[in-house]
Length: 262
Image 1 (cartoon, one colour):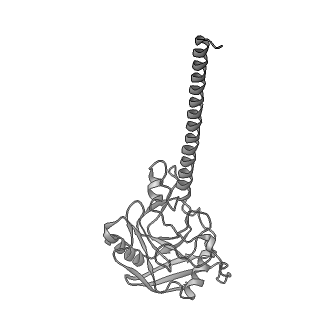
Image 2 (cartoon, rainbow, N blue to C red):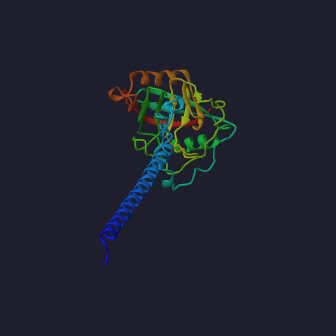
């Protein structure tokens, strides 16, 4: 027969075992929660890094991040690229001029084929086909960076020619500073991209005021004085609704684009 003392000790032992079991279950739940939180943080970090210019606004809010938050992004996915890059037909030793007849006046810029043969050849090929005709400059930024972005046949930042071209001339503007940027001088014309290397398509941006950006955008053209003034006037009018980044208040519709040898 079990004595009352033995019974009490047995009940006490069972109670202790139940407490230990509950504590172990609580520790397991805590470990699972920690793993979940760590995974979520990792996902957020990956998303933040992947959207670099696309947006790179994760981490320190320094000048590089501020510039990246308004960076000239081309959202057309390179995975959608089906057509090959146009065959090289230009004179690689020559200069070419691209002229745009727009609703805000004529805009022209010179391209040096010796420095940017793939970009120059692509733009001539597209212009010869009338690719840019009837398109609009869909984006204006007025803070941190100062650019007018054009070349999207869809007009929403997601369009492209169906192929991509390699980055070129990336060292032309000098070595990046401690903030990871270089100055794109007013008058520069450069390629937009998805934030990944060699993802330029047809979208480009016109710099109307010195802008600091990472040296990852092919600088391929230089506007003349009259053209720079025209783009400055568009920039001065601002974006729709007074936003720092959006469609230009002065709509810029491209009626005709042409590329000719200088």
